[in-house]
Length: 319
Image (cartoon, rainbow, N blue to C red; front, side, top):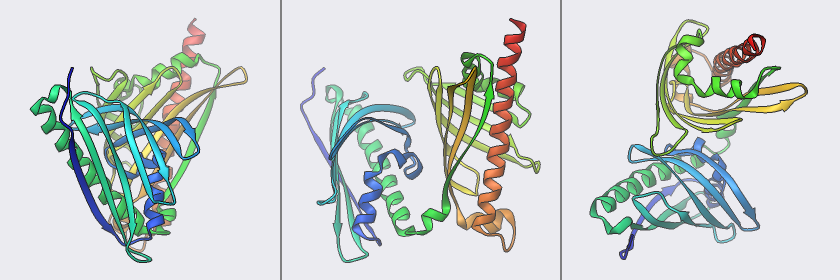
């Protein structure tokens, strides 16, 4: 495998927000799945003063890729540089820089620069990478702009919560129940349809579309990407969300607890204020939407947790 030519791209946007606010969004990398449409999951592998090593799962060109990057953070200079350690083909190498420039107290310029090489300098690979960089960069810049310009309103729109059940059943059986989401229409009363595909290139990466019934009888269609870290954790991002949300990420975790295990479903949501009255009715507020969304998600996830517990405990009884 040889590569010789390096390609450079620059994308930029003007943001009506303080430069430090914009930088904070770029620096908070573990929040990116909530912030940026292409990102599915991000986790730290190492953290040092001024630097970090991260692993990212993201949608690119219709596929889910993952890679490990190092980032150097310069809060004084309002810059974040990044370099992929091991890239996913057709990318041979990738790096770049986020640069925030203040143009007044509440106006900033954000640039996102990339440099990349394609495996074997293949022209089709160059085209694929260029299209993915263009698409994702424009999406990410627009997302930073929208979030930064929300200011304090974001704190009202974004929230997290979790539900936990305890079981004496085998943790491996609980994990298998959650992992085998393709069987949920047969196993769960609130799931009427679920189409699941597991990526043949990226093991344990699942893409699924699901129809879910809520307590009021309405049906919501969602699409998600799940990364399954057996034997005790599954994380996911909804890539198509109901109207009341602009973002929804979550996880299923299994941890030892006494003589059994605790199984927890965690959700993080950003509400869509423009849809509140259209979906819930006149005079309804963001607070009403928060209550509605949390109740709907909590009801369904708790139902799933209870069925997973029953499945694992029944197997123990049979054994």
